[in-house]
Image (tube, rainbow, N blue to C red):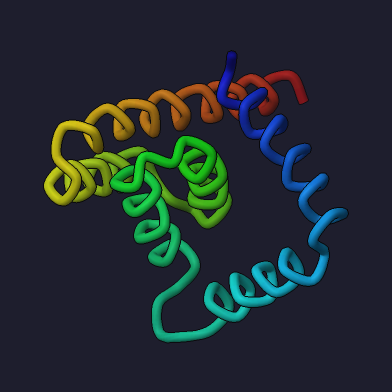
Length: 120
């Protein structure tokens, strides 16, 4: 299954969660917004942290969401490589496996964006 498909599937599952526990999901969304829109670090830097934690915690859906957010925030593949290295340092072998997922996800989404740009 492609990373794009995995991301869309997870979004669908989260929509179901929003229907069944709307207050909890709304609260989580408000917390996320408050954190990403405030403080001394910019959105891209915060995505670096979130992505490293997603890798170290072995959360593939988190990786997909934060790769996309990092790309939208202007992150680079080279930054991703450093993020992967830090996550591997902190999470060992299991994090290394998820770091490989993160890189593959980046490459897939970047190729799709490049393809969309050439056909536009």
